[in-house]
Length: 341
Image (cartoon, rainbow, N blue to C red; front, top):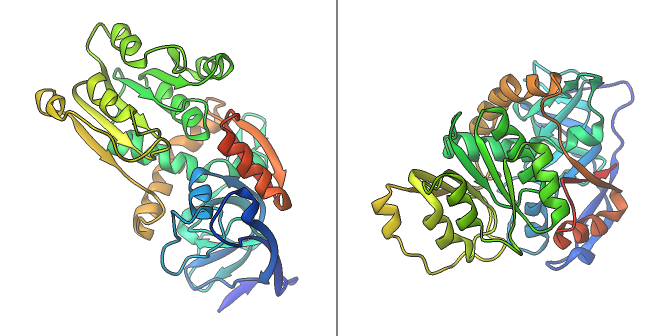
């Protein structure tokens, strides 16, 4: 059974489909039947949806949705609860939420597990906008699990964040600095490096002009960095092993420059390094629910105190999803790109 408002969601909704694997132009507007929540799910009337690299990978045919998930792109949304499943106790129709989704965010309505939704956080001046809230779930969940759970970053340690001006990077810099870590970041222009410094990086390294290994090693007195968060891969893989400090941890969350490289693994033995990687979307419902609780207890208070906020780049109407993808893949953005629904 499903509890709904008096004005039930319409039978049909607007959405953006992937017409075939390819570039941004394969994203097309469509109409579909509005989904109904299962017992442990909520239906969200979407106000805004985040745009992320996994969306582009799915669009290109390289990141299929998990079994049972919507084939529409969109892994994070903000909006209001439009319907709830019979077993849902926390949420009521009309509640304002942001949520991690298994897919389907590029639409008027989107399903997610009830435990993967969080209340719209409030900052010092009141609740965040729906657009800002939509930029949080996928990004914060990804950074939290990889930087602090897998990377085990602690106060007093050093961290290098590749892609520091991206949505992931701008989030990781802020959260790492808030934990008391020394933060270094790489970015591709003076403007992007300046943004990294404003967010809390001790040193921003322009990878087009500078050697991040040499600079970070010198800044740490020759020791290297304790944690490296890498979304680049490719030629960065052996350089990360070179730069990592004794007992260092390297975590890959993407391979924008390729997933293969020639790597000398001797440093991993000599320095007792740990390398790991992860993807969030296939993780279990229980894992994501536990992650949501941890983030609500830790990150949401930082938002309320004005110590953390998503960095916003540009927002596009849902019908311009292809333009949003083109901007993301141009790497000209600083922070998060969103769609308004």
